[in-house]
Every structure is written in C-alpha cells, then in structure tokens.
Length: 314
Image (cartoon, rainbow, N blue to C red; front, top):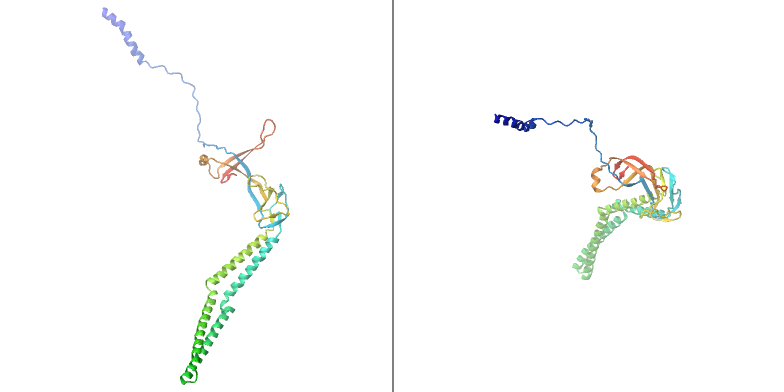
C-alpha cells in the first residue's frame, strides 16, 4: 500500500516535463499585414557635372591676306544678319602679288606652248640647218680631197695640199657630229620629262594666280550667319585689343568674333571613372546659376533639357 502511494505521488512529477514538451507553444499575436504593389521601373544614376555655357557655333573672322584695314562696318555687341558686311581691306599689296603671279603664268604658258610645237620650233629648225650645212660642207671637202689625190698621183699638185684637205675633212666630220648631237638634244627638250616639267610649271603658276584672285575677292568680309559681334579673345583668356581702321594686319590676324546665340551648349569636364556612365546622345538637364546679388547671396537659376554630345551637353 505504501509503494502505491509513493507511485501516485511521483507520477505527476514525472508526467509534467513530458506534458510541457508535448504541449504546443503559444503563437505570437499576428501583426496587421501591409501589401505593397511592385512594378518594373528603370533605375537611374545621376551624374552632376560643372561646366560653362557657350554658343554652339562661333567663328573668328581673320584677315585673308596681308593688308591695311580700310574700314570696320560693325562694332562689338552689335547684332548682324547673314551676309551683312563686316569689314573692308585695302588690296594694294595683294594686287602686286596677283600681277606677279599672272606674269609667271603667262611665261609658263608660252614655254609650254613652245614645247608642244617643239618639232617645228625655231631652235629645232636652226639645229637641223646646222646639220644639213655640215653635211654639205663635208661632201664638198671629201670630193675635193679625192680630186686632189688624183692630181697628186699625176704629180700635178704637192703633197701638202692633200694633207691640208684631209685635215679639213676630219674637222668637218667632227663638226657634223657635234651638230647632230646638238639636234638630238634640242629634240629631247620638247619630249618626255621636258614637256612634263613645263606642264607642271604651268599648272603651279596658274594655281598660284587663281588662289590670289580668290583671296582678293574676300576684300569685304560678310557674316556667314546671324550672330552677335564679340571681342576676340587672346590666348590668356583676356580680351585682345580691337583692330582699328588703318591698321596693318597680316594674313590670319583675328579681326572679329561672331557668336550665334540661337543654340547654346554646355562644356563640362568628366572624370575618367565616370565615362562609362555617359554616351553620346544621352539626355541631360542643365541648371545655370548667375552671379550672387544682395547680402543673402541669392543666385539666379536657369534650367533646361539637352542631350550629351561629343563636346558636352547641347
């Protein structure tokens, strides 16, 4: 009886861990669920660049030839239309060069024509006459030598006459050979390389003359497009001294700068690590800031859209 009582007392203690292990744990309270609708979207990465705004089309009007500025027809800050005269140059210096080039062209043309008709020209004719005259003289001397030798065999003339005629025939043969060599040389001058050289000299002389004529036609400079006349900048970035009427200028001297304000572009430097994020034609946004005003330093802002080009955002 005692052992059953002990078992009855021990049984609840033994079953308690088993029941605790088998009993399911209480679930935590479920929070309010929130659903988010996910749609496919494009991921963007923005790259900020700092640059400057300038005209997309600019042009420097330079002196086409060495001259004196006769007149300036526009002023800095003035708006001009396409085809409007800008300046006029004195052509006294280029006129001298043009006349010299024309004279060289005329000489080259005469030489070329002479070589084209070289076979019937005066030099070839003169050389041929010399050959013919040498042959005739040699034939007469040879005939006289034959007759003199016959007379010498008969004892009519002395030996010295035969020797003298023999020397004369020998000299005339040499003269005839020289005349024939000269004829061949004269004929060669009108053929092959000689004619090609004359043709090239004529072409070069004509090209120089035509080039000077084309430059002279640019005596009056005109605006190629509607633009704003701006000062010409120097190499250090400062404005260069403006050209004045009556000033001597050399070829290539900047006279005026034309800026087309119809289309602007932004030039900005890009780090080489960021080049992979850019491509030509890529759209971009430009935000400009003007100078600060007042104590608060408020800045004027301007924004616009553009596309990335080879020279920047345009």
